[in-house]
Image 1 (tube, helix red, strand yellow):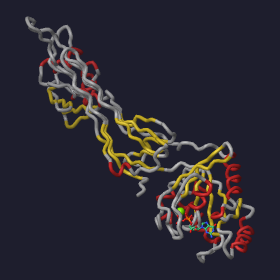
Image 2: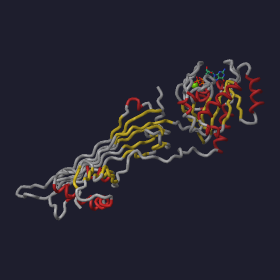
Image 3: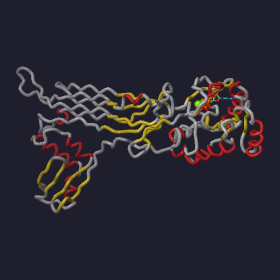
Image 4: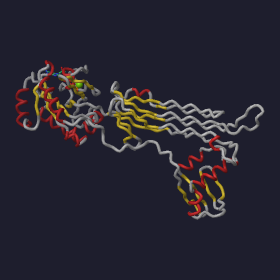
Length: 420
Ligand SMILES: Nc1nc2c(ncn2[C@@H]2O[C@H](COP(=O)(O)OP(=O)(O)OP(=O)(O)O)[C@@H](O)[C@H]2O)c(=O)[nH]1
Ligand SMILES: [Mg+2]
């Protein structure tokens, strides 16, 4: 199993509610409001790690929820904050929203991104005490958070990608030049998921990815298909491995054209990647003749390294050639994109719509904020509400829009008669 694309569900913690407690003590009748604030909900945090290279873990766990903030208590005691949840993803994971827009590119080892923020805790009643309202019996509700669905897409980050038909010796090559131990066998599609290996060369090193074999139609999903072409996107250089002997009765020259066509029709930008040709299986009959033909046709366009990978022949030349070219290339870069936020900002805007003659509805962040206040039929609470809509300009705006005495105003769950 190799999962490189998966949908998961994430939710930040709800904010805890503020408390509406009134201070009581023996012999003290009304000690005033002492309800504490609710705690903030936990965040959803993604962290990139190089110790994973698949998204397989998300096959088993798809729901990630941060802890809720606790409610505030008596004696102004604050509710505890909800615990954050940390979601570990392999380096190269791109997080997308439901519209396919990029929320984050988890590009660097250890990179940490707060993807969802926990709900704010509600304020306790003592915040709402005024000279005229000595004992507010209402407090604010914590912000309730929403669950979001996101898609994780792994785009392996390697300096060098090995591409080519099945069975040409890509995995053999990786096993010879790097620390990786991929499965090698004499049949097609031995490799079912990308293998990564680190290739050391004197005091430098680079990462090589062995991509599953490509065939005609791969860019439209044939064979192991499209999915794996995704892993080529983030390499800096490609090594095109050929069975130059044509031992499977294909012509290596047409193999070369065909695979290139698949790669470039997947993404034309891949044409910008430099390509080195590893002409493998030089030990087999027919190899010399084919190599000569290949050189005649492509010799001035590509660096061509003849190889007999199984006996390590040509490996050193190939590595030297790769290192030389990598040194000239810019370092890998994160994707360029404008990140979109999953969560709506917690704003205090409002909008007014006239639903029909004399009926106005107020919507927006401010209304959500007001809705979080408990006991809206409580007198104190209603007074507070009236003051807020006056202070934030809602009343003035209603008047401007034509509200007069007797007009109906709807704000969230509340409906009342406008009194000018
Ligand atoms: N004669 C010869 N055989 C080779 C050489 N290199 C690899 N092979 C053989 O070719 C077969 C396929 O090798 P792999 O490395 O598994 O090929 P692959 O390109 O990774 O194949 P897929 O994973 O199926 O795409 C194995 O039997 C290897 O031993 C070589 O230089 N000469
Ligand atoms: Mg292989």
